[in-house]
Amino acid sequence: MRRRMRNGTDVLEDLARSALAGAAATWAMGPVTTYLYEHESKQARNAEDEARAGKTAYDTAAEKAAGILGQEVSEEQRRRAGSAIHWALGTGAGAAYGVLRNRLPGAEACAGLLFGTAFWLVIDEVGNYALRLTPAPTAFPWQTHARGLVGHLVFGVTAHAVLKALDAVA
Image 1: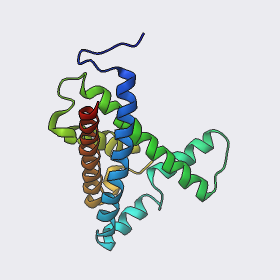
Image 2 (image 1 turned 180 degrees about the horizontal axis):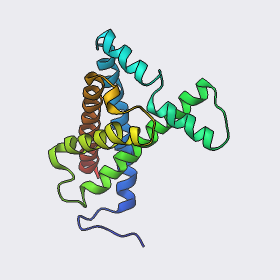
Image 3 (image 1 turned 135 degrees about the vertical axis):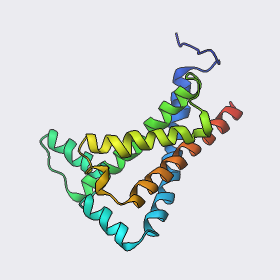
């Protein structure tokens, strides 16, 4: 028997709808962060690229996962697996937001901006370094942090807007 929560929504239903919102939010933040990166100073881009040795945190996660499994991956395999990790994280974060927003007071605060900020802090500023996927935050120029924050704000607002649209048609 599925359990309906106090607002009448089913957890599994929320998970499915929210995963869709997370995927949409992941897609939406891509062009924004790409645009910002491409319009940063060459000095800031070079400093970031040097700090991360030309790899994204997701590329490094894919490489580490392969190593744990005793496998070696080509650059193309690493990039594809890194992209899959990126999408899985975004979809999962959207699912978490969607389930929490109806069950945790304040989760919807600021139309997704609070969630986007928390997501940025937990993943970009703490998690990546804690998992040794990137160097310490101090290794990156301020533009990297600002771009990450803006991207995650876009993520939060998009996830919120998609969920509100899905609520309206449900």
